[in-house]
Amino acid sequence: MPAAWGRSPFMSAFKPYLKAHIPLSETQLSLAFTVGNLIAASLVPVFVCSFGKNFSLTKAFRRVYVVFILGFLSFFGAMRCYGVTMMCFLFLVLGYCGLRACGQGLLPTLVCSYGAALYDDKKCAWLASWHISVQVFASLVLYILSACNAFNYWHVVLLTQICILLLYVLCVPRNLIHISSVEIKSPQKFRLVFGQFPFAFVFGMCLMALENFHATGIMFHVSNFALEQSVPLEKIFKVFLPITILTLVFTPMASWLYGYVKLPFLLFLQILSLVFANGILLKLSNDVSIWLFAVANGLAWAFNHVLSYVLVSKILPETQRAIGYSTLIGFGSLCSAVGPFIYSCLFAVFGNYMSVGRFMFVINSAVALWILYLCLKPKRFGV
Image (tube, rainbow, N blue to C red; front, side):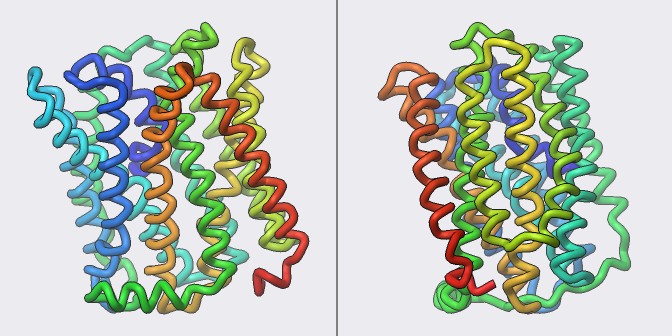
């Protein structure tokens, strides 16, 4: 459940309040987000490897929650800088690094590794449904805050999250299992292990990373897309709850579908959903379009959740799964990190976010057609 607060919806909803309380420009804020994400993405596999060859999940979860708390506290430091731009920037980098490393990287890695240690890939696909079901709580909170127009009180939200995470540190069960993992202590060993990953895993990882890149870029700047189309912020931020509910509905459908189709086809459906979301983003002027935007994102997120479980558990051996999950999630976080900054840079080139959206729609459509061509040759995947 706390992992949802390190993901794009929270970052997007928090952005207007944060921007109003710090002495940074739009580009500087996006750069801080990108730098923090880049550091977080690189630290995820390193952090997992630091647990050891046979690590305790109990201790691992507690360490992650502590890092999560430090990330939230860093935002208070950023908002207390009072015009000191460099110090504010550094605090923001630490804050984004802590939240993204834990919410988007380490917590999903530990949960997925736990599931893969107990079940096969078919059952892991269904575990994805349970995983997303608990994240609906965060979107429900965002929906209530939007309905109450409570955007001026995000400091209370941060303090509440810190208190909740402190309870999590104290309440982690002591008898969680130990996870077998590849022990990596040097950069050379890193390269050796990564070089052993099969083509099917690397290909799927890249497609999931592409979806993360666009999903984060879009959600981080969704307020900008809304304002350029004269859509009230209160209305666009309420879309996060329908997206989460639809993801909750679509995830078990994707889990069921996984039992009947080839893995490459599931990867293609994920990218097709991304193209759909990208196209609808350009037509948010009415309620029907906003609902279609929610449907498209719900589908993309659902396929992403299922793939995040099954891609590793189906393809990699047991000892490679912990490092496999951390690599998958870390690389996805890396691409997610550059999404908002690339969107901001393209905004500086085109002059508006609508033109950025049109440019990305053309690129994503071309990628989807190329992937469809590759997916018609399943033997290349080796699965």
